[in-house]
Structure formats: C-alpha cells, structure tokens
Image (cartoon, rainbow, N blue to C red):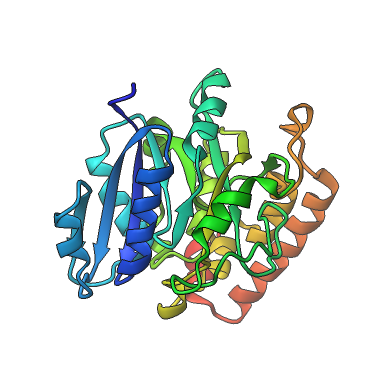
Length: 297
C-alpha cells in the first residue's frame, strides 16, 4: 500500500491559489499514505491552472464558478480509490491526519460510515466538534506553521458525534448510493448537512468525528466572496426539519462520542422540533414561497 493511493481527495477551488498551494503541500508533507489529489478549478484566473499543470495533481476546469456541489460530483468521475475525501482549499492537514481516519475505517465491519477530521480554527466557534479558538494565523501571511506542528496535539478533545463538514471521508459506493452532493444547494451552503441527511435516509448510522485526525482551517476564505444560496430554508423545505434540529436531535453533532449511544436519538426534543419545523415550513407556504410549494410533501 505504501506506493498506492489510499484516498481520493476532492478539492474545489475558486481563485484561491496561495491557500490551495498550502493545502496541497500539507497533504504531501504530513500524510502517512499516498493519495490521489483531484482539484476542481472554478474560473482559475489567478494562475491556478498553470500551477496545477506543473504538479502531480489532476484537475477539471470550469470557466465560471459552478460552486461546490457541481464540482464535487464532476470530480467523482476521476476517482480511482475506494474512499472519497472532501476537503476545502483553505485547510492545512496536520501529521497523521489520514492515518487516524484509516485506523478507524479498518475497525469497522462495513462501508456504511461517514467520518470527519477534527478541525482547529482561529476564532471562537459555536459547535463543540471544532477546537476553537486555536489561533495559528487567520491568513496565509500570519500563519504560524511550525507553532501549529509543535502543538496541534496538545488540545484535549474527544471523538464526537455528527460528522458533516469537511474534511470527511466516505466509501465510494455510499457516495454513489446517495448520488453525491445535491446540486439544488448550489453554490453550496448547507450542502454538507444535506449530504449527511441523505446518508441517514440511506441507512448510514455511524457519523463520527475523529479527534486524532486534525486539520487547521482558515475559515471560509472563498465563501466570503460568493453570493450564497438560502441553504437553511432549502434544507427545511426538502427534509421537513430544520438543519439545526437535524444536527442537534439526530446526528447530535459535537457531543462526545460513546459507542453505546451510537444509535441514540433525542426523541422528545426531536418531536418538538419536528412540530416547530412544520410550522415554519407552513409559514413559508403561507407567504407564497415558491420553493416551499415545490418541496412540500
């Protein structure tokens, strides 16, 4: 396996070359195994294509920004391994990030899982699945790489319930089973919880964040520039539950992982939140929301 690719890493990018370079360099430098690196280039007017062509990465180019969902689904056609990793271009992987995920995968009885790395971010964050604040720089210019490498393991954190956002890994057969990422969420806001919801609907029950797999995230470098879709409303219209309720009551994102409670659902909270979600959905209908009418069941 030493010379074979273990994961296929899918990275959408949008004129973000300095961060993309750092991301790819960290994969090469800090990974335990070899991986296939697949990059979807949106626009690429900043020299991204020229840089990739001088690397060993593969890429697909779109002359316009098609967003995350179309990009990920297009890259799926180039995958050559059994395991698909989705990663943002503004991430820096820490040593043995992939080994920790692979060790977990090898323990599992089947391919019905969804695993996430544990992210470190410079600013305070609402979800306990993220190690924050852990400020090693909020930009390329202020990034303290060596300080991060010396201390990323020092933050006490457990494995956690509720894998959703990248970096994450899923078996290619499970990806195909649910049809990848939903393009109606383009350019991509709330496509992460939607993907998890599709996995849940398909019978996947193991949504686990791995503490030992750590990745630094500069936080939404590209999404700050895009015109966002109203993903929260779209999620509600599609699943008849708010994204927040799905994460809190079903996936329990951020709670410390305990194997004995892997299938536990907060039933009483869920019942109340489903009732509230349906009222919210009905309100959209009453106001004449076009998407609400299209998704109403």
